[in-house]
Every structure is written in structure tokens, then in C-alpha cells.
Image (tube, rainbow, N blue to C red; front, side, top):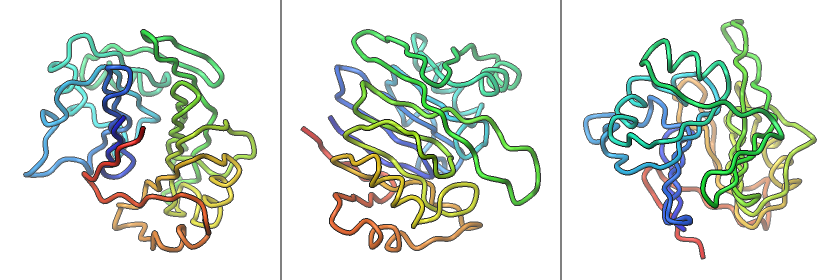
Length: 217
């Protein structure tokens, strides 16, 4: 299996049971050197919530056009957004609900978005657990209840999500084999990733540059 990180919470999982899984390919991913066409073959698309840094309808429309059999899983807010903005059909999943896609099990996990600096209403967020092995919580505050898993992606910027100390507590309680920090690419909410790494002590943390990959047996 190969895992690649992209801005700001986008994760691409390749060579996993002959499937390619993409999570939260938001607007920070795209520039003159990378477009939605560059994702290539995608089998499963998981979207945690409606914010553009996680869900960009125009880009998802391109991904869908390139992959007619694409399965998109998210919550009802995202389903409505994709239908209204791009005429894309998707499926919903709720916390603790399971969805079997071939031989891959996707489980919805409760997440709660932090307060927005603008004071606007918070979006609904759905986290994803893949085969009880890979966990992406999306944007969330610290939650006591969360799954045990082997690999976890942890948002760390401290605005609308956990700060480095909270994120470290969260990650330690998950107690995975591998921890990859995410959600720290916005210039509006700067954070030093080393603060999170230092809080994690001897845990296996990999800070991936955008576009960087890691191979996992």
C-alpha cells in the first residue's frame, strides 16, 4: 500500500486491495502544476464535509467524469452540495454505519467541527475508517470516543480543529502504528508541525511534504 499526502487534508491511498481511495481533495490541491485530472484512476472518493479545502465541486466533477464508476461517500450536506453545484450523485454514510465496497469495508466515524472564526454555523463532519485499519477524522475537535486503528491522519492547526497538544492526546489514545499530521497548510492558521511531533515523543510520526508518499507493507 502507498499513502500520499496533499494539501490540506487530502490523502491518496493506492495499491490497496487493487483500489485507489482518495479522501478530501480540496481547493488547496490545485495549481498550475496539478489539476483534478492528475488524480487519474480513482475507485472510491471519501469527503468529510462541505468546506472547499476538503470538497471542491468543480474538481470532483472532473474526477467523476474521468471515473464513471466512482463511488462517492459522505454526509447529507456534501451530497446536497455536489448535486446542486455539479449535478453529481453520491451516497451518504452515518457514524457507526458500515458500507461494503467490494472487499473493502468503510465505516462512518463521528467527528465534530470546531467553531468557525467567522461565527458561521459549523458544518456536519463524517470521519472514515477503512477496514478498521486506516482512520481519517476530517476536521474535528478532540473527541474521547474514537476507533483503534493502525494508521491515523490527525488535523493539528488549532483553529477549527485540534491544536498540536490536543492532536497528540487524540493520536496517542488511538495508539496506531503510524501517525500522519494533516490540516496545517492554510496560511490563515499557521502552525509549527514540530510542536505536534515533539508532543508525540517516541510514537511513529511521519510528516509528509505535499505530494510525498510512503510505502507500507
